[in-house]
Image 1: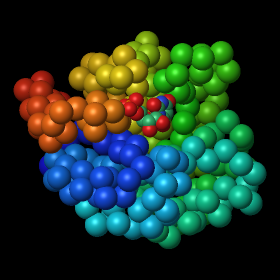
Image 2: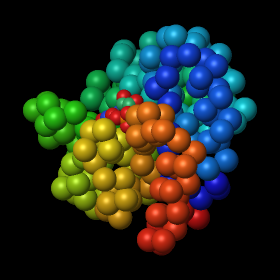
Image 3: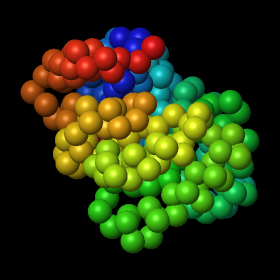
Image 4: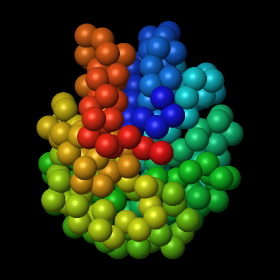
Length: 217
Ligand code: BMP
């Protein structure tokens, strides 16, 4: 579905299972996100294979020195990633290297996280990280679906940056409210792949978005 607001986080480790599910849902979502468990279990080629079905966002949360960051981003881009998620906290030099290595693949920067203890270290610095992101060519940011107060504040200052939000359902967030409060896309993992019928779950959520005038362009 061209205008779906769902990014399906397929954090599965069996290549057949992930490709079968990707085939079933690809027409009804915006993109698929994969993370380290999938890439480490299935190999980096899983990015190429999934790209046959959908846009693929590689959630690598890159957080290293510039030299290493550039290489990581470049490998993901070379395998067809549509998007890459990077940390911003290591600093401007490190983020610049991600954007350079990404070669046009869209970079999403983490400005806050959904795990409760991210309040202690990371989340308080979201404004600085967002400023660094904006001035270094990122396409979007990651902000939590289970912390609506923070999401609303982040939305007010996000400008053109797309907001993608994890933390719904299994982490307590409400995906519809997350879109209402300004996220462009909700990232949903276990809520989809652990549901009895992932296709039905996705169709129902797309329908709910439609009824609430929340379908994207
Ligand atoms: P789930 O819907 O099953 O909780 O999955 C959420 C996904 O989003 C996981 O891949 C997780 O690593 C990722 N994520 C998150 O949950 N919170 C964040 O702040 C950033 C993430 O990338």
